[in-house]
Amino acid sequence: MTLTNEPFQPVRLYYSIPGRDSVLAKLRPLECLVEVPDEQCWQWLFQAEAASLRFGGGYEDVPQERRPVILGRIRFPTNTRMVLQTNSVARAIGGARFFASYLGPACEAIRCRLVNRLFAAEEGQLHELMKTLDQNVTAIDPREAEAALGREFKDARTPEDAERVAAERLQRRLDSKEDVPPVEDFPLAPEEETPDFNHLMITLQLRLLRAMEHWQGNTDLTLTAIIMRAIEQGTLTGELFTSA
Image (cartoon, rainbow, N blue to C red; front, side, top):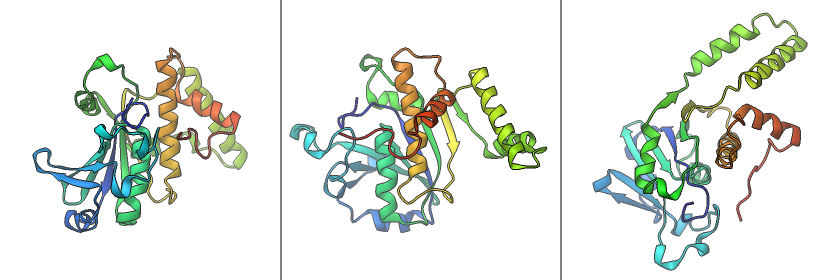
């Protein structure tokens, strides 16, 4: 668990930005951001402007001696790319919402990478476990996915045909037990995202739910099966988890 009381699960968001200097001009005034030259990053701290955020707990739940908590780290691999790396799904969602309010629509979250599992305390220090984000990564190419969908739906002439093909495709996924890879890097759709990042929230929370199920021993449960269960229960929209 993190110091803000949610499951530790490394997540990284990749942004397209108009330029490093223009972004930093908006970030530098924030008291919750501190530059750390030795790490070549900016630490996002649980204080000042970020203190009103809630994760597994709020700012008041963090012991005084453990403040300020590092919520994430921001880096600029190139002049037009920004990366936000966090220790949990809740922090990634909160970070996307928080920084969008300061950076505006010109800075778009275009890809996401996360480790699709939870960790035991004895598996190592958190800074070492964060390295799993760059181990055995499966990167999903949206062009391949679009081509596959095109092949499957090419003979669908009516809405009924499309519904039948979609149902058959979903059933094949369920039957095959196809699941997400251990470390998943996938594209986001900023042009379809809502102002409160509802799509990102559902995407990440479903994967957290899968990781929690596997942690509890339900290792045969796939992401597709979890999505189907959420649809049947009517919980696929809105908050799947609530902060307390």
